[in-house]
Length: 171
Image: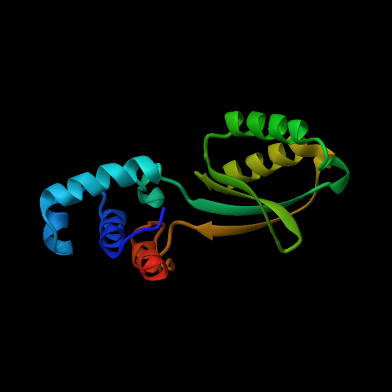
């Protein structure tokens, strides 16, 4: 979908505040409210919008966010059904996982992002992960973020991404 400048402005506005009314968004973008309503509905369908809340996890009692990188055993990469079965079971057992994907970098082939109530819960999670994945995962590395501090420069939200998307896709 090639987006027009007005579509990008609307998308950016929605990423900054998905609760904004069509009327307020129309005023800030400089178009009519029916135009925003029509374009929002089209974008919701074509871009598969998902409206959600990203809370301050620390205020919910979570202490750790972990970025876990895994290198899958090359001898096991031929059987994607095994991969999917292992991942599906692990995901069903760990609802604290907020993102998992295949990828490349640092010699790794997957990333998992998870939230943990405390370090003890994180250690249990890692023990279960290593046990569950067994010889399928041959190397792993984790980057742990403390959610209880004032060291976060940009919080986990998409409002900061909004202007970037607008600038990259502008005609």
